[in-house]
Length: 108
Image 1 (cartoon, one colour):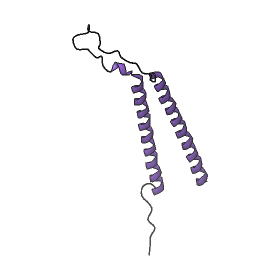
Image 2 (cartoon, one colour):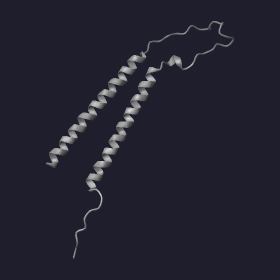
Image 3 (tube, rainbow, N blue to C red):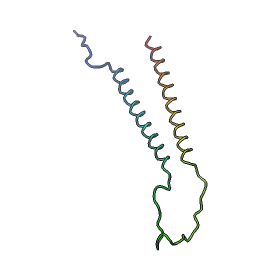
Image 4 (cartoon, rainbow, N blue to C red):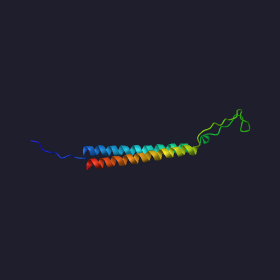
């Protein structure tokens, strides 16, 4: 004799999909936070970190002449970070819609 026991709780594949959805949302939130942090760090110029005071007071001229090397401006770094974030968001939306269409096709 065997009796059929109904399942309690969510169906195992549904539970796995829910866990994967939570993980995707967490990864997206972390990616957005990382991009925001990098963009804000790129905006602050390196010169605002500290103002060096020469020994002997501010009236003493520096012994060496500072050499300014070429570099990337802050607005360029911000623009690159913004472009990368937009591309990542676009790819995430396209992949999500592709996966949703695939799930809908297999379910039907």
